[in-house]
Image (cartoon, rainbow, N blue to C red; front, side, top):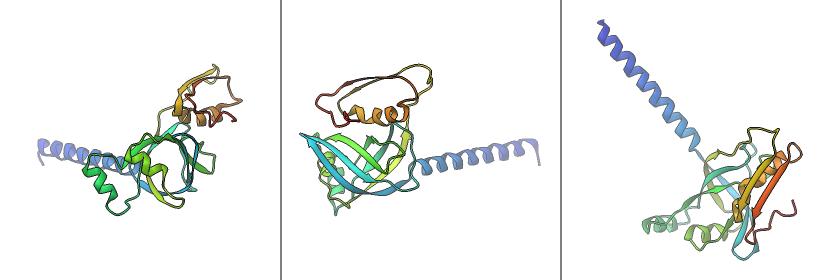
Length: 184
């Protein structure tokens, strides 16, 4: 075999392997799983706390977010997509990995997605995919300083619960009426 032909086969094999690894990573990260709605609370106004059953094998980092997709109730999802409306959204997980449920805190802003999500009956299934986290604590020797506004506290709640007692925490929450986690 000539040297150029060997090099071509090596390059082609390497590109094929990289494509396979990339496809595997995307398939792994984007996998979806059905979850069951345990209950939905409406503590005040348009604020909703959604309790979702946590699969026993599911883990995540504090401050994680995921893509949640509404159930396909007949042709409702297709109708919304045809109008350019969303049937899925990225939402922050307000619970720690140690808690026995997944919590979502959100406002019902009037969109079809939020209206449907906040009015699902107990036992309804939604899908969760693309679970990820970008909040990290790098230096535990310094105080943890957190700023949140409104329902943004949901991304900080698990982080604060995880680091409470391990380092000083300074929290500035401009609550705009969202006081649901104040007793914690």
